[in-house]
Length: 154
Image (cartoon, rainbow, N blue to C red):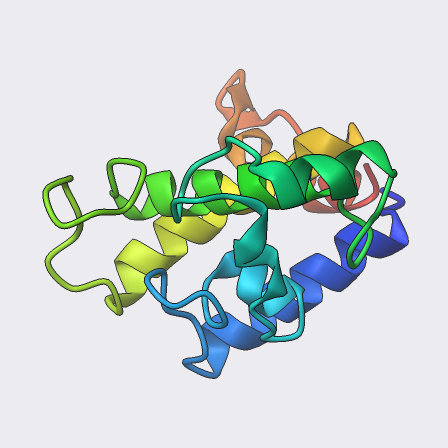
């Protein structure tokens, strides 16, 4: 499977952040989009509320001018973040009353969030979800339906 440069870059940064404990859903520089954007916080200025996919004036202007940041439009960045936060178990947008995980740094919480973010990133690029392992476990006549190499070559 051929991945776009932006998707390959995003996956690499998320992988690194997850395995090096640089991922935290409640901090704009350590969340999924914060890591994709080299731990910068500028992207939070595209909306009024963390977790919202509603562009504010700054976001709309950047979107209409066709600006891309690390390959993604302002709206795409907000959508990636929303997918990540929902995958972590947050009710959006983030605030003091909405549901959130008890321990946002729990590896299972972060993994679930990454699965959701990666699925959305792949959807944006029109490629099969790189984390979808369902084919690995499909059987036909008590035998694996697909060989591992067939799946890896997709």
